[in-house]
Length: 477
Image 1: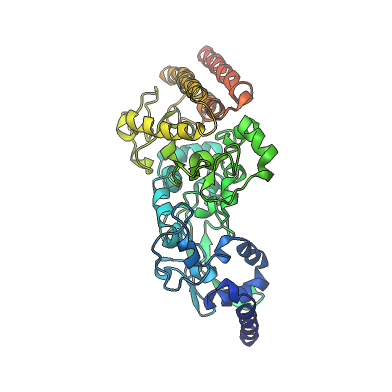
Image 2: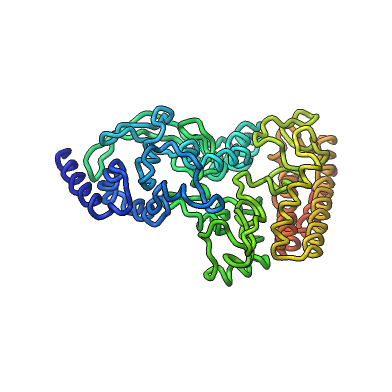
Protein backbone atom coordinates (compact mmCIF):
# COMPACT_ATOMS: atom_id res chain seq x y z
CA UNK A 1 0.00 0.00 0.00
CA UNK A 2 2.79 2.43 0.87
CA UNK A 3 4.55 1.68 -2.42
CA UNK A 4 1.30 2.70 -4.08
CA UNK A 5 1.31 5.94 -2.07
CA UNK A 6 4.90 6.69 -3.05
CA UNK A 7 4.08 6.18 -6.73
CA UNK A 8 1.13 8.55 -6.49
CA UNK A 9 3.19 11.15 -4.67
CA UNK A 10 6.02 10.90 -7.17
CA UNK A 11 3.65 11.30 -10.10
CA UNK A 12 1.92 14.33 -8.65
CA UNK A 13 5.19 15.84 -7.46
CA UNK A 14 6.38 15.79 -11.06
CA UNK A 15 3.01 17.11 -12.26
CA UNK A 16 2.97 20.05 -9.86
CA UNK A 17 6.63 20.85 -10.47
CA UNK A 18 6.05 21.22 -14.20
CA UNK A 19 2.52 22.62 -14.20
CA UNK A 20 2.76 25.07 -11.31
CA UNK A 21 6.37 26.23 -11.48
CA UNK A 22 5.08 29.75 -12.11
CA UNK A 23 3.35 29.70 -8.75
CA UNK A 24 6.57 28.94 -6.82
CA UNK A 25 5.03 26.26 -4.63
CA UNK A 26 7.54 24.84 -2.15
CA UNK A 27 8.57 21.18 -2.60
CA UNK A 28 7.00 20.33 0.78
CA UNK A 29 3.65 21.82 -0.18
CA UNK A 30 3.81 20.10 -3.57
CA UNK A 31 4.01 16.77 -1.75
CA UNK A 32 0.97 17.72 0.36
CA UNK A 33 -0.98 18.73 -2.74
CA UNK A 34 -0.13 15.55 -4.61
CA UNK A 35 -2.21 13.52 -2.14
CA UNK A 36 -4.77 16.07 -1.03
CA UNK A 37 -5.79 16.84 -4.60
CA UNK A 38 -7.26 13.33 -4.42
CA UNK A 39 -8.44 12.98 -0.81
CA UNK A 40 -9.64 16.56 -0.12
CA UNK A 41 -10.08 18.23 -3.52
CA UNK A 42 -12.36 20.91 -2.07
CA UNK A 43 -9.60 22.13 0.24
CA UNK A 44 -7.11 22.34 -2.61
CA UNK A 45 -9.54 24.16 -4.91
CA UNK A 46 -10.36 26.64 -2.17
CA UNK A 47 -6.66 27.27 -1.49
CA UNK A 48 -6.01 27.82 -5.20
CA UNK A 49 -8.73 30.49 -5.21
CA UNK A 50 -7.03 32.48 -2.44
CA UNK A 51 -4.12 34.92 -2.46
CA UNK A 52 -1.91 32.54 -0.47
CA UNK A 53 -1.57 30.38 -3.60
CA UNK A 54 -1.01 33.29 -5.98
CA UNK A 55 1.34 35.81 -4.37
CA UNK A 56 4.93 34.96 -3.46
CA UNK A 57 6.27 36.42 -0.23
CA UNK A 58 8.72 38.68 -2.05
CA UNK A 59 5.85 40.24 -4.00
CA UNK A 60 3.74 40.65 -0.86
CA UNK A 61 6.64 42.44 0.83
CA UNK A 62 7.24 44.74 -2.12
CA UNK A 63 3.81 46.37 -1.94
CA UNK A 64 3.52 49.93 -0.70
CA UNK A 65 2.87 50.27 3.07
CA UNK A 66 -0.85 50.98 2.67
CA UNK A 67 -1.39 47.92 0.47
CA UNK A 68 0.90 45.53 2.34
CA UNK A 69 -0.76 42.86 4.49
CA UNK A 70 2.33 41.05 5.83
CA UNK A 71 5.12 41.87 8.28
CA UNK A 72 7.93 43.95 6.82
CA UNK A 73 10.31 41.26 8.11
CA UNK A 74 9.47 37.58 7.72
CA UNK A 75 11.20 34.55 9.21
CA UNK A 76 10.73 32.45 6.06
CA UNK A 77 14.19 32.09 4.47
CA UNK A 78 12.78 31.43 1.01
CA UNK A 79 10.70 34.41 -0.04
CA UNK A 80 10.18 33.17 -3.60
CA UNK A 81 7.38 30.83 -2.56
CA UNK A 82 3.66 31.13 -2.01
CA UNK A 83 2.05 30.13 1.29
CA UNK A 84 0.79 26.57 1.04
CA UNK A 85 -0.08 23.58 3.21
CA UNK A 86 3.40 22.96 4.63
CA UNK A 87 4.08 26.62 5.39
CA UNK A 88 1.17 26.64 7.88
CA UNK A 89 0.66 23.04 9.03
CA UNK A 90 4.33 22.32 9.82
CA UNK A 91 5.10 25.60 11.61
CA UNK A 92 6.23 25.48 15.24
CA UNK A 93 5.68 21.71 15.54
CA UNK A 94 7.19 21.53 19.01
CA UNK A 95 4.57 23.90 20.47
CA UNK A 96 1.54 22.07 19.05
CA UNK A 97 0.25 19.18 21.13
CA UNK A 98 -1.63 17.98 18.01
CA UNK A 99 1.59 17.49 16.02
CA UNK A 100 1.90 14.00 14.53
CA UNK A 101 4.07 12.15 12.01
CA UNK A 102 2.47 12.27 8.59
CA UNK A 103 4.24 10.99 5.48
CA UNK A 104 7.63 12.22 6.60
CA UNK A 105 6.46 15.53 8.06
CA UNK A 106 5.67 16.78 11.54
CA UNK A 107 2.16 18.10 10.90
CA UNK A 108 -0.41 19.74 13.16
CA UNK A 109 -4.12 19.99 12.34
CA UNK A 110 -5.07 23.21 14.13
CA UNK A 111 -3.39 26.27 12.62
CA UNK A 112 -3.43 28.92 15.33
CA UNK A 113 -2.96 32.69 15.58
CA UNK A 114 0.64 32.03 16.68
CA UNK A 115 1.22 30.40 13.30
CA UNK A 116 -0.50 33.21 11.42
CA UNK A 117 1.64 35.72 13.34
CA UNK A 118 4.72 34.64 11.39
CA UNK A 119 3.35 36.74 8.51
CA UNK A 120 0.68 38.80 10.27
CA UNK A 121 2.12 39.70 13.68
CA UNK A 122 0.48 43.14 13.91
CA UNK A 123 -2.98 41.71 13.28
CA UNK A 124 -2.46 38.98 15.88
CA UNK A 125 -1.17 41.48 18.46
CA UNK A 126 -4.21 43.66 17.88
CA UNK A 127 -6.57 40.69 18.08
CA UNK A 128 -5.19 39.78 21.51
CA UNK A 129 -6.66 43.11 22.74
CA UNK A 130 -10.02 42.17 21.26
CA UNK A 131 -12.67 40.78 23.63
CA UNK A 132 -13.31 38.10 21.02
CA UNK A 133 -9.85 36.57 21.55
CA UNK A 134 -10.78 35.88 25.19
CA UNK A 135 -14.36 34.83 24.44
CA UNK A 136 -13.81 31.28 25.70
CA UNK A 137 -12.07 32.09 28.98
CA UNK A 138 -14.28 35.10 29.68
CA UNK A 139 -17.32 32.83 29.45
CA UNK A 140 -16.02 29.62 31.02
CA UNK A 141 -14.29 31.37 33.92
CA UNK A 142 -17.39 33.35 34.83
CA UNK A 143 -19.28 31.46 37.59
CA UNK A 144 -22.58 32.94 36.40
CA UNK A 145 -22.13 31.15 33.05
CA UNK A 146 -22.32 27.72 34.66
CA UNK A 147 -25.67 28.65 36.20
CA UNK A 148 -26.88 30.08 32.89
CA UNK A 149 -26.15 26.99 30.80
CA UNK A 150 -27.78 24.67 33.31
CA UNK A 151 -30.98 26.69 33.04
CA UNK A 152 -30.68 27.25 29.28
CA UNK A 153 -29.40 24.03 27.70
CA UNK A 154 -30.32 21.04 29.86
CA UNK A 155 -30.09 20.18 33.58
CA UNK A 156 -26.64 18.60 33.25
CA UNK A 157 -25.21 19.64 29.89
CA UNK A 158 -22.27 17.56 28.68
CA UNK A 159 -19.27 19.00 26.87
CA UNK A 160 -20.64 18.06 23.44
CA UNK A 161 -23.84 20.02 24.08
CA UNK A 162 -21.83 22.97 25.36
CA UNK A 163 -19.48 22.87 22.35
CA UNK A 164 -22.52 22.82 20.07
CA UNK A 165 -24.16 25.75 21.86
CA UNK A 166 -22.41 28.75 23.44
CA UNK A 167 -18.90 27.58 22.55
CA UNK A 168 -19.73 27.30 18.86
CA UNK A 169 -19.19 31.07 18.76
CA UNK A 170 -17.14 31.71 21.89
CA UNK A 171 -14.72 28.93 20.96
CA UNK A 172 -14.06 25.47 22.33
CA UNK A 173 -10.97 24.15 24.04
CA UNK A 174 -9.27 21.85 21.53
CA UNK A 175 -7.45 19.06 23.36
CA UNK A 176 -5.56 15.98 22.20
CA UNK A 177 -7.02 12.78 23.65
CA UNK A 178 -4.69 10.18 22.19
CA UNK A 179 -4.28 8.81 18.68
CA UNK A 180 -6.16 6.42 16.43
CA UNK A 181 -5.64 4.51 13.20
CA UNK A 182 -8.02 5.48 10.39
CA UNK A 183 -8.60 3.95 6.99
CA UNK A 184 -7.99 6.52 4.25
CA UNK A 185 -7.83 6.48 0.48
CA UNK A 186 -4.07 6.21 0.93
CA UNK A 187 -4.29 3.29 3.37
CA UNK A 188 -4.16 3.14 7.15
CA UNK A 189 -2.77 6.24 8.87
CA UNK A 190 -2.46 7.44 12.45
CA UNK A 191 -4.10 10.72 13.50
CA UNK A 192 -4.58 12.57 16.80
CA UNK A 193 -8.01 12.44 18.44
CA UNK A 194 -9.15 16.01 19.09
CA UNK A 195 -11.80 16.94 21.66
CA UNK A 196 -13.52 20.24 20.87
CA UNK A 197 -12.79 20.00 17.16
CA UNK A 198 -14.03 21.10 14.65
CA UNK A 199 -14.59 24.70 15.76
CA UNK A 200 -14.04 28.22 14.43
CA UNK A 201 -15.05 30.10 17.57
CA UNK A 202 -13.44 33.50 18.04
CA UNK A 203 -11.87 32.65 21.41
CA UNK A 204 -10.96 29.02 20.74
CA UNK A 205 -8.21 27.58 22.96
CA UNK A 206 -5.77 25.88 20.61
CA UNK A 207 -3.43 22.93 21.25
CA UNK A 208 -0.47 25.35 21.34
CA UNK A 209 -2.27 27.26 24.15
CA UNK A 210 -2.94 30.28 21.94
CA UNK A 211 -6.37 31.89 21.99
CA UNK A 212 -8.54 32.71 19.00
CA UNK A 213 -9.22 31.56 15.47
CA UNK A 214 -8.41 33.74 12.48
CA UNK A 215 -10.68 31.43 10.48
CA UNK A 216 -13.74 32.86 12.28
CA UNK A 217 -13.62 35.69 9.75
CA UNK A 218 -11.13 34.40 7.15
CA UNK A 219 -12.37 30.82 6.61
CA UNK A 220 -10.19 27.98 5.39
CA UNK A 221 -8.61 27.62 2.89
CA UNK A 222 -8.99 30.70 0.73
CA UNK A 223 -8.67 33.01 3.78
CA UNK A 224 -10.53 35.54 1.71
CA UNK A 225 -10.58 39.21 2.65
CA UNK A 226 -13.74 39.54 0.55
CA UNK A 227 -15.54 37.01 2.74
CA UNK A 228 -14.39 38.81 5.89
CA UNK A 229 -15.60 42.15 4.54
CA UNK A 230 -19.12 40.92 3.77
CA UNK A 231 -21.70 40.89 6.56
CA UNK A 232 -22.68 37.23 6.14
CA UNK A 233 -19.48 36.20 7.92
CA UNK A 234 -20.36 38.21 11.02
CA UNK A 235 -23.93 36.92 10.92
CA UNK A 236 -22.80 33.46 12.03
CA UNK A 237 -22.58 34.72 15.61
CA UNK A 238 -24.28 38.12 15.41
CA UNK A 239 -27.75 37.19 14.23
CA UNK A 240 -29.74 35.77 17.13
CA UNK A 241 -32.08 37.59 19.52
CA UNK A 242 -29.18 38.22 21.93
CA UNK A 243 -26.96 39.83 19.25
CA UNK A 244 -29.27 40.89 16.39
CA UNK A 245 -26.60 42.93 14.57
CA UNK A 246 -26.99 41.21 11.20
CA UNK A 247 -30.79 41.34 11.30
CA UNK A 248 -30.68 45.04 12.14
CA UNK A 249 -28.10 45.73 9.42
CA UNK A 250 -30.21 43.85 6.86
CA UNK A 251 -33.18 46.20 7.33
CA UNK A 252 -31.09 49.36 7.73
CA UNK A 253 -30.53 51.80 4.87
CA UNK A 254 -26.90 50.70 4.73
CA UNK A 255 -28.07 47.10 4.42
CA UNK A 256 -30.60 48.08 1.74
CA UNK A 257 -27.87 49.67 -0.37
CA UNK A 258 -25.50 46.75 0.19
CA UNK A 259 -28.13 44.21 -0.89
CA UNK A 260 -28.92 46.18 -4.04
CA UNK A 261 -25.41 47.22 -5.10
CA UNK A 262 -22.91 44.73 -3.63
CA UNK A 263 -22.24 43.09 -7.02
CA UNK A 264 -20.88 46.42 -8.28
CA UNK A 265 -18.43 46.86 -5.40
CA UNK A 266 -14.78 45.85 -4.96
CA UNK A 267 -14.19 43.82 -1.80
CA UNK A 268 -10.54 43.02 -2.51
CA UNK A 269 -8.79 46.39 -2.72
CA UNK A 270 -6.36 47.44 -0.01
CA UNK A 271 -6.69 50.11 1.18
CA UNK A 272 -10.46 50.20 0.82
CA UNK A 273 -11.56 53.40 -0.90
CA UNK A 274 -14.80 55.01 0.34
CA UNK A 275 -17.13 56.03 -2.49
CA UNK A 276 -15.15 54.13 -5.10
CA UNK A 277 -14.80 50.53 -3.90
CA UNK A 278 -18.07 50.64 -1.96
CA UNK A 279 -20.94 53.07 -1.40
CA UNK A 280 -22.25 51.96 2.00
CA UNK A 281 -20.57 50.33 4.99
CA UNK A 282 -20.54 46.67 5.99
CA UNK A 283 -19.56 45.44 9.46
CA UNK A 284 -15.87 45.43 8.47
CA UNK A 285 -16.02 49.01 7.19
CA UNK A 286 -16.90 50.42 10.59
CA UNK A 287 -15.09 47.98 12.85
CA UNK A 288 -11.96 46.67 11.07
CA UNK A 289 -10.91 47.97 7.67
CA UNK A 290 -8.25 50.44 6.58
CA UNK A 291 -10.22 53.18 4.83
CA UNK A 292 -9.02 55.96 2.56
CA UNK A 293 -10.80 58.74 0.69
CA UNK A 294 -10.63 59.18 -3.09
CA UNK A 295 -7.32 61.05 -2.69
CA UNK A 296 -5.81 58.16 -0.69
CA UNK A 297 -5.89 60.11 2.58
CA UNK A 298 -6.27 57.73 5.51
CA UNK A 299 -9.63 57.96 7.27
CA UNK A 300 -8.92 55.15 9.77
CA UNK A 301 -6.17 52.57 10.07
CA UNK A 302 -6.89 48.85 9.90
CA UNK A 303 -7.55 47.26 13.28
CA UNK A 304 -8.16 43.73 14.49
CA UNK A 305 -8.79 44.99 18.02
CA UNK A 306 -12.22 46.06 16.73
CA UNK A 307 -13.39 47.68 19.96
CA UNK A 308 -10.96 50.60 19.54
CA UNK A 309 -13.66 52.32 17.48
CA UNK A 310 -16.34 51.52 20.06
CA UNK A 311 -16.92 53.56 23.20
CA UNK A 312 -19.90 51.57 24.52
CA UNK A 313 -20.34 47.84 25.03
CA UNK A 314 -24.00 47.48 24.18
CA UNK A 315 -24.78 43.76 24.42
CA UNK A 316 -24.15 40.60 26.40
CA UNK A 317 -24.31 42.11 29.89
CA UNK A 318 -27.11 43.51 32.03
CA UNK A 319 -26.47 47.21 31.29
CA UNK A 320 -24.73 49.00 28.44
CA UNK A 321 -21.43 50.29 29.79
CA UNK A 322 -18.05 51.71 28.69
CA UNK A 323 -15.81 49.06 27.15
CA UNK A 324 -13.53 47.11 29.50
CA UNK A 325 -9.89 48.22 29.61
CA UNK A 326 -8.64 44.65 29.31
CA UNK A 327 -9.80 41.91 26.94
CA UNK A 328 -9.62 39.49 29.89
CA UNK A 329 -12.86 40.36 31.67
CA UNK A 330 -12.46 37.64 34.30
CA UNK A 331 -10.60 40.28 36.35
CA UNK A 332 -13.76 42.37 36.72
CA UNK A 333 -15.62 42.29 40.03
CA UNK A 334 -18.32 44.66 41.26
CA UNK A 335 -18.87 45.70 44.90
CA UNK A 336 -20.99 42.61 45.51
CA UNK A 337 -18.17 40.40 44.26
CA UNK A 338 -20.06 39.45 41.11
CA UNK A 339 -18.08 39.15 37.83
CA UNK A 340 -19.97 42.05 36.27
CA UNK A 341 -18.86 45.47 34.91
CA UNK A 342 -21.82 47.13 36.62
CA UNK A 343 -23.66 46.78 39.90
CA UNK A 344 -27.03 45.05 39.70
CA UNK A 345 -28.50 48.53 40.00
CA UNK A 346 -26.57 49.81 36.99
CA UNK A 347 -23.64 51.79 38.39
CA UNK A 348 -20.45 51.31 36.36
CA UNK A 349 -17.47 49.53 37.94
CA UNK A 350 -15.17 52.28 36.66
CA UNK A 351 -11.92 50.71 37.83
CA UNK A 352 -12.13 48.14 35.01
CA UNK A 353 -13.67 50.29 32.27
CA UNK A 354 -12.27 52.87 29.86
CA UNK A 355 -12.61 56.48 30.99
CA UNK A 356 -14.48 59.33 29.32
CA UNK A 357 -11.38 60.55 27.50
CA UNK A 358 -10.86 57.16 25.86
CA UNK A 359 -14.57 56.92 25.06
CA UNK A 360 -14.41 60.28 23.28
CA UNK A 361 -11.32 59.17 21.34
CA UNK A 362 -13.03 55.98 20.16
CA UNK A 363 -16.25 57.73 19.25
CA UNK A 364 -14.28 60.30 17.27
CA UNK A 365 -12.78 57.48 15.19
CA UNK A 366 -16.21 56.07 14.45
CA UNK A 367 -17.57 59.50 13.56
CA UNK A 368 -14.71 60.02 11.10
CA UNK A 369 -15.93 56.94 9.23
CA UNK A 370 -19.51 58.21 9.22
CA UNK A 371 -18.42 61.63 7.96
CA UNK A 372 -16.76 60.12 4.91
CA UNK A 373 -20.33 59.85 3.57
CA UNK A 374 -22.49 62.03 5.86
CA UNK A 375 -22.54 65.65 7.00
CA UNK A 376 -21.53 66.50 10.56
CA UNK A 377 -25.10 67.48 11.47
CA UNK A 378 -26.36 64.05 10.38
CA UNK A 379 -23.64 62.27 12.34
CA UNK A 380 -24.04 64.32 15.52
CA UNK A 381 -27.80 63.84 15.43
CA UNK A 382 -27.33 60.08 15.06
CA UNK A 383 -25.04 59.86 18.08
CA UNK A 384 -27.35 62.07 20.16
CA UNK A 385 -30.13 59.54 19.56
CA UNK A 386 -27.80 56.64 20.29
CA UNK A 387 -26.68 58.10 23.63
CA UNK A 388 -30.31 58.64 24.57
CA UNK A 389 -31.06 55.01 23.72
CA UNK A 390 -28.29 53.80 26.01
CA UNK A 391 -29.72 55.92 28.83
CA UNK A 392 -33.34 54.83 28.37
CA UNK A 393 -32.63 51.12 27.84
CA UNK A 394 -30.48 51.05 30.97
CA UNK A 395 -33.31 52.76 32.86
CA UNK A 396 -35.82 50.16 31.66
CA UNK A 397 -33.46 47.36 32.62
CA UNK A 398 -33.11 48.93 36.06
CA UNK A 399 -36.91 49.02 36.39
CA UNK A 400 -37.01 45.28 35.69
CA UNK A 401 -34.13 44.68 38.12
CA UNK A 402 -35.99 46.50 40.92
CA UNK A 403 -38.96 44.17 40.44
CA UNK A 404 -36.67 41.14 40.64
CA UNK A 405 -34.90 42.48 43.74
CA UNK A 406 -38.30 42.92 45.41
CA UNK A 407 -39.19 39.33 44.55
CA UNK A 408 -35.98 38.12 46.18
CA UNK A 409 -36.40 40.40 49.19
CA UNK A 410 -39.96 39.20 49.83
CA UNK A 411 -39.01 35.53 49.44
CA UNK A 412 -41.12 34.72 46.37
CA UNK A 413 -38.01 34.05 44.27
CA UNK A 414 -34.64 32.53 45.20
CA UNK A 415 -31.49 34.50 44.39
CA UNK A 416 -29.17 31.47 44.58
CA UNK A 417 -29.45 31.15 40.79
CA UNK A 418 -30.54 34.23 38.89
CA UNK A 419 -31.58 32.39 35.74
CA UNK A 420 -33.87 29.51 36.69
CA UNK A 421 -37.24 30.95 37.83
CA UNK A 422 -39.93 32.45 35.62
CA UNK A 423 -39.55 36.02 36.89
CA UNK A 424 -35.76 35.72 36.56
CA UNK A 425 -36.04 34.53 32.97
CA UNK A 426 -38.27 37.54 32.22
CA UNK A 427 -35.56 39.75 33.69
CA UNK A 428 -32.87 38.10 31.56
CA UNK A 429 -34.94 38.66 28.42
CA UNK A 430 -35.27 42.34 29.36
CA UNK A 431 -31.54 42.99 28.86
CA UNK A 432 -30.33 40.01 26.81
CA UNK A 433 -32.96 40.32 24.06
CA UNK A 434 -35.05 43.49 24.19
CA UNK A 435 -32.58 46.15 25.39
CA UNK A 436 -29.96 44.71 23.04
CA UNK A 437 -32.34 44.90 20.09
CA UNK A 438 -33.19 48.54 20.79
CA UNK A 439 -29.53 49.51 21.14
CA UNK A 440 -28.47 47.78 17.93
CA UNK A 441 -31.40 49.36 16.10
CA UNK A 442 -30.36 52.78 17.36
CA UNK A 443 -26.68 52.25 16.54
CA UNK A 444 -27.31 50.95 13.02
CA UNK A 445 -30.64 52.40 11.91
CA UNK A 446 -32.65 49.23 12.41
CA UNK A 447 -36.18 50.64 12.25
CA UNK A 448 -38.67 48.14 13.68
CA UNK A 449 -36.05 46.27 15.73
CA UNK A 450 -36.20 49.33 17.96
CA UNK A 451 -39.98 49.13 18.37
CA UNK A 452 -42.11 46.04 17.77
CA UNK A 453 -39.54 43.42 16.71
CA UNK A 454 -38.21 42.68 20.20
CA UNK A 455 -37.81 46.42 20.73
CA UNK A 456 -39.34 49.06 22.99
CA UNK A 457 -42.79 47.46 22.91
CA UNK A 458 -41.33 44.32 24.49
CA UNK A 459 -39.23 46.28 26.99
CA UNK A 460 -42.41 47.87 28.36
CA UNK A 461 -44.57 44.77 28.02
CA UNK A 462 -41.99 42.69 29.87
CA UNK A 463 -41.91 45.14 32.79
CA UNK A 464 -45.68 44.85 33.08
CA UNK A 465 -45.48 41.04 32.90
CA UNK A 466 -42.90 41.04 35.69
CA UNK A 467 -45.08 43.31 37.85
CA UNK A 468 -48.11 41.08 37.27
CA UNK A 469 -46.10 37.94 38.01
CA UNK A 470 -44.73 39.47 41.23
CA UNK A 471 -48.27 40.43 42.28
CA UNK A 472 -49.39 36.85 41.57
CA UNK A 473 -46.53 35.38 43.61
CA UNK A 474 -47.22 37.70 46.55
CA UNK A 475 -50.95 36.87 46.49
CA UNK A 476 -50.13 33.19 46.34
CA UNK A 477 -47.82 33.53 49.32
